[in-house]
Amino acid sequence: MGAPISRDPEQLAVLAAKGDRDALEELVRQLHQPLWRFSYHLTGERDLADEAAQETWLRVVQALPRFRGESSVLTWLLPLP
Image (cartoon, rainbow, N blue to C red; front, side, top):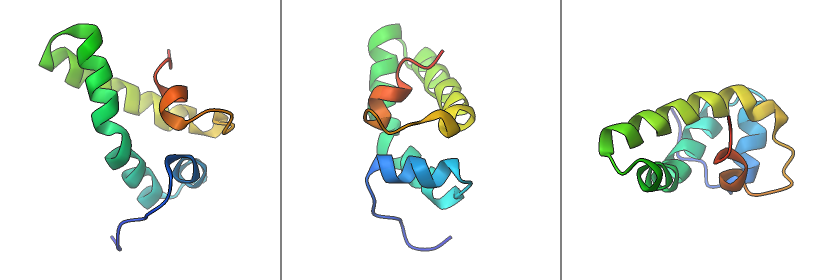
């Protein structure tokens, strides 16, 4: 793995959607804490927040090709079903 990528989440999402694993890793690094905090706010429990965040990241990976860049990545990923 090379040096960390310094790009905004929207650029990283586009690259990750094209299969760039380094971009995906950086996207997760940048957005995991806000996602986890949101999950904790909804669940009120650490274990449930961990599980919800992990499940969301799995769905993000599957949904990235549908990201159109019309909102921030964080806004887009929070309501993923």
